[in-house]
Image (cartoon, rainbow, N blue to C red; front, side):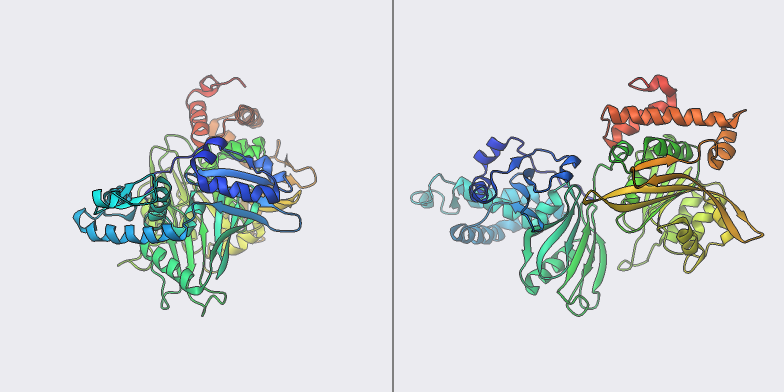
Length: 547
């Protein structure tokens, strides 16, 4: 996938106001009603507790975002971007016409994402910057060029790149690193899920069916998954890696065509961030560390939007650095830091031949990887995953289930059909959920359960819960101390411990390593990976801090 070059970000509030008249004008209007907004270069999760935020932050010049809430109203997400007056609109049309006239002179880029330099060159050839709005003598000197003021040129160039290379009116939303999902449920305003402020309502709208359908047709064609009356429901991957589901036409979407974008995060969330947020404890994370380092099979289970993939990505840093890892997904969401990582993605209808999860899992098995990561198990590929576990290939995956009991029911029923006797090939099950606390939704690991064995006399699976979340105190309790089947009967024996209970000392050490990283604010995914990698190679001596 192509990563577009990120626009520069003006970090100073005074410079931003001086450099961008549209921001200055907006501030004059909004300050009279709400008071002067607070400027923040970066947002912190602690801002979630602000009852009535009034915050502006940059997401890439010349775009700024204003988050605010009035008593009794929705949380608002206002995009501040340049606006065209009537004169600028006419000049914009003239510029586009002239660019079309000379566009044939330049080579056509292979991908639309590579068109930025070409568009800028064309724009420069057909325009000239003037300090005056009056063309005057300039028309005589530059008969072939359109005179623009510096402000007009900036506005026209912004819209040129936004609409031709970017995502049109949704460009600001794709630029914002704090958004998780973008929702359009028909004609009207767009809403989004903000990583800090939860559901927010934007000032971006599709006023009618014509505007909305045109946007969906252009966007879906760009990603080579065009929607139509014949293909009303389409899944696709955007150029930046975000995944989108299109539903086209009022016949199937009564409020008008709709779409949902699940945004892609270029740098995954780290395990230390997850600990710092309270999603899991350092002790729980240390337990997963020991399990994945020693080849245990793990499912991360939960309902939609519970943070399953985020947790899977974060815990992937616990797999041995030298392991050969294969990931198999429908849409590319998993990120692995390992040097030997084979990233496999299915190919769906629309191409000559489909390549399914089942096909890719079989291919992965032939390559003898140390670990197989399955983005999500939904169908017959589940059978292959359990066959892989039986043949000694550790598997990690996400799975839609709210409890271990529900997971076993889904795995053993249609369409997955894993025999119940095979379930004990899975070692640990992590259950995660979005819960409501202090007026906001937060993610919490509810439990970790060990799969001990299949009891054939009663035809059931014996399980043992080793971690449980206490919702009253918002803490994770380790029930498995001196009672963990996986630590004592599996990992301790692999490591050759004479007294298998000594394994808990190693667990305590890793817990302290993770706690120290949180204390020192080592939160970047790849920085955390480097610390874990050094610990694996050199032990405590390799750490950049004391424990």
